[in-house]
Length: 258
Image 1 (cartoon, helix red, strand yellow):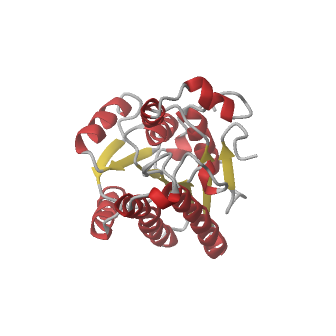
Image 2 (image 1 turned 90 degrees about the vertical axis):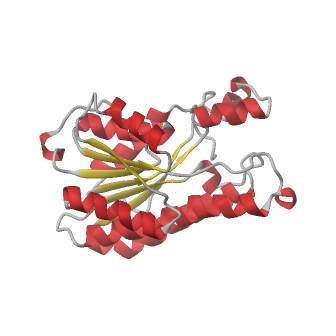
């Protein structure tokens, strides 16, 4: 999707969790090009500030705010900072998440890893979603939220691990619940389910398990892996253009879910 600044969006504010790298960074880049005020958040301050500096070349209205989405107090502090600085939140992309243990079967999965994955991917998304909705309910123009799930949120996967699959199924269910609850309030909640996206995290997992990019490409009916901008394009569309779409689970996976 080609993007260019839009004067109507200059006062709009978007939050992207996990916005310092990968899919989150691509989303931040896409919104920055459109001229919005972009807030990226993450746990790693060093990585976050580096991302902010890069994005500032596209749009000076990009800030990084450190936050741990698994901690309610940290999430509340994040939203207080956003509201103190901008007074509103128009769009949100709940992207922060972790892989957990890939290629580990259910009976062998470590409890500590399960807890961490569920805490970040599911609870963290829920904590952010709550605050986003509460703020949007106070605004006349309301807003739109996109949760980043996964193809593992709509089908079983031997590769992703039980915790990742369970957490992303939960994100899909949460998206549908919130969408139907707040449709009457004109707050749209959708999810994007990416396939394998060629990010640094994906490359690390593939290398760790002695796989090749070609093997991963063959998993996808379109015979390629995705790139982060593929997902960002879908997120941008759902937020800015899909005014009659809510509760949708949009697969950006080259047909992997089929």
